[in-house]
Amino acid sequence: MAAPSIRSITAAKTTLQPGESTVVTIDAFDPDARTITLNGRVTDAGGHVSTVTTQLTVGDPITFELTTDDETVAVVADPANPGRFTVTV
Image (cartoon, rainbow, N blue to C red):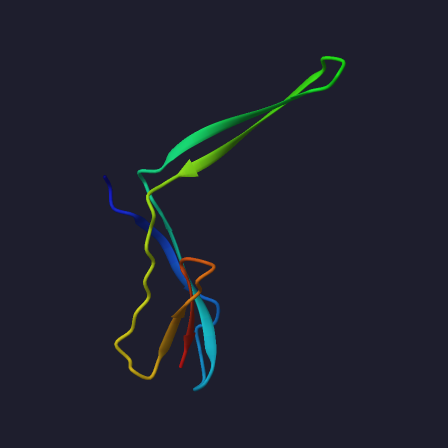
């Protein structure tokens, strides 16, 4: 099993005044992920067939963390979007 890889960590706004916030996003992936192919098929009453294929990526769950040693800074994780944090100074 390989360690997860971080592609980037970016802040929407990189200069803040006291009391301001920015969104910081960590983009990471699991190199051990595997791809699943799904095949859909529909047939009408006349026997006409239509098919479509899509792929899903299945990876290990990744836990995202963003921390700071600065006690004046608040970091709050977005529960609906792993890897996304609001940082307030």
